[in-house]
Image (cartoon, rainbow, N blue to C red; front, top):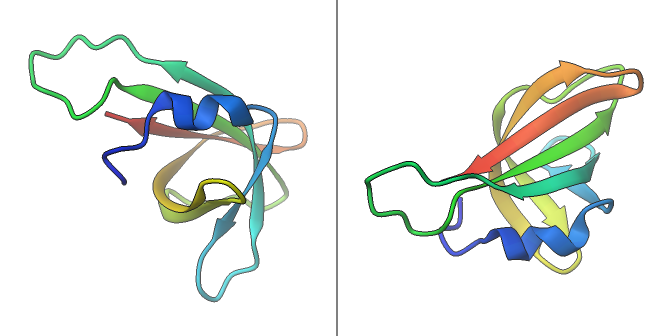
Length: 99
């Protein structure tokens, strides 16, 4: 992940679609549903304040946990570890956490 990415880089795009891109795969759309700060309870020096991104994507299939290219017209392609959280009525919910 890019150490210089911050919550403020994603917050304006809540409700917008990002595409997960990887060689050999069709783009997979994820809608950013929230971008929130995580309280920093660590005593370790961190490169940025921690934050959490939540996405929703279509079914019936889902993305397995992996580091994927997350593409947005303004941000470009960002490598992000995306974790499937739960199935919902329309597909799946996903999470990416930055520390």
